[in-house]
Image (cartoon, rainbow, N blue to C red; front, top):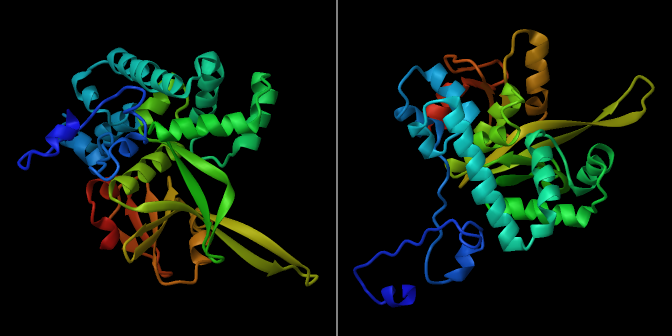
Length: 316
């Protein structure tokens, strides 16, 4: 029937769905060469705030807790919102992942892996590290190949995103470890029953999702620097830049910092940025709202709400 519609010149055909095939990234292979894929994401903070009845700070508190699934606008109480999100992750996402990948005998292990990822967003990990976690914490023997398969299933179902590390000076990708972020922070919080209130990691996840929504390709930046000690012995230190963002000819280095209350904290948050020798823009996104400013090293400081509400702020 769909192929028949392709022959009608004045029709645009859009196919949607949420079953074990259509929730997967493999949907585009079903219509290869005969259509385009349009990614639909949860609401951005700007979209969420446009429908929210209240102040910006209250809107962000809601968004960082419950995420951006549109139906949440119609849910008023914590019980209604948490029930909706739990039903979504258990009865849509996980059920479709199980059915599509024939994992009916592995639902317990699959759920425990998702719990581990939910508790460690923004942390570096890989299948060997997760294998050790299973053995030590869950007392389950599961090999890294199986874990890798489950991680791929989560990514292909648009539940989590896998982010690679990039050696900025060496200009090469690092195979392992990676970081994983949730496509919707509310689903992550629901999975752990809203127990872990981690504003720094939550903020980092929200910034990553916003950059993806704006069309950037995003990596985690690594800077390796060689030093010599007082005995002239060489050693190497490694610094991390939270996000390296690309779009066309534009590139931005972004550090997510909750606050910078003193000089020591400023040095801690900017030392990786200062080791980058190119001329692309270096940015620190702070939790509180500030008038954007540049410091003496050319680093641009902006507030989180400003960043989320102004899609052109990075270019200013």
